[in-house]
Image 1 (cartoon, rainbow over the protein chains, first blue to last red):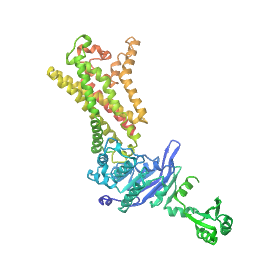
Image 2: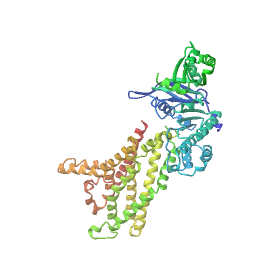
Image 3: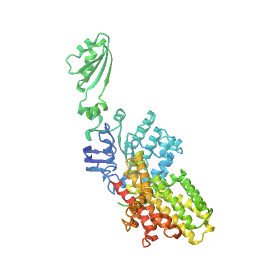
Image 4: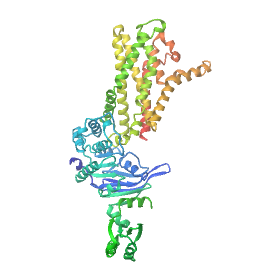
Length: 313
Length: 273
């Protein structure tokens, strides 16, 4: 990370969205959104298709003008003449980007480096960083989807950006590619970069983002860290219990009067949904059931629980 | 908003070299050369004469070729300039970079125009070299004017193609619109004017006709190249009704240049919305 790029960072949030709406006729793609993304934060934007996250993403990049409200990135109003300088410090990876098949990986990076006004000298190093050094001279028509996605990331990293917008960035990557990708993101974050990403692979995001925003119907329904959102929503802990044959009644009796939801999924398994505060009480009761219990698994509320809960109130 | 040259040059350079590398420029240049030489030597075969006759006759014959070919080539070259990027998903990426929509549009146009101009110059330039020893200075000048106006004709239709690429929602519609544009300007326009003239017995709209011809870059090109050639002007239908006071090279060149600028300006306005 080039330190000189960070000297000009102003105080205040990296991205400041205030009362932003975007209407297409009667359709409110984004409706009254307020959002502040702190500098150095790894921020996730999640939502169903049509939730408004792509439109919000594009407004942050100045690709779509808000019908109402304002978006400031790096302290500068998006879309104004001063925003050109900010664009040089932004990296963007669109979803499903298709580059030019007639160019090689190196030529593609060189073209985007010139457009970004940054040195072409770093192109070879970036290809190496994303694991494409061996394919630098090959035409993109010979690249796999995963290789194109890696090239897209290399393109986004041109000019050592301190603000990265990544739309579904791991699409097409194999597990090794996903691991490498997040390793690079963590390096960038350690260097002070702000990263905003969207993903449908919620389990992948929840372990990595500092905070996230859940969008539905054009509105931000919740913002915060995964832990904070779990606590705020008080989503139940789910406990699966494998029970010895004929002992279901004994286990139910052991759970007694605890205010938990117990369901039999088959003749030898119970699914318990318990408030977080009662997690230990449930485990104590199951321990008391002794030999009736064969196995227990505990699942905390996942991002899917938050996500689909918010999307389907 | 300030206009920066570096991003325009980058986009233009890519468009130009893409056409060089794909051999598009070479193919078009060869096409022009072969057709032009064939016309120059065999254009008078119907009258029983084979071989080079005169530069006036050669230019007049080439006008018939160019008027069909160059508009079509220009429209096919530029119809997906913007809509192609949009459909590919790379338009958002380009516009997220420090380049304005106007700069992107200009870069695309200039790069494609350079490729078209280069192939036109190369194709007809080779013909000029072959014919050079048979031409005097005036003949070379006339052929130079023909090449310049051919390039401007291509640039005018390329500007229309870029406008089509901005307006169309997808490549399929853009290609259809491009072909329809060619059909209207190259085939239909003159037929409609002739029809009006014939139905009205030469009295309806006769005075306005020369001005209406200026609304078609193909007709402007035709008049520009044919009006000064006495022995062939009568073969070119509507151009014979073109009054001498309008048939000034300066005015006709300015009209062709306006045809390059106006569609591009409309495209830029539409692209900004």
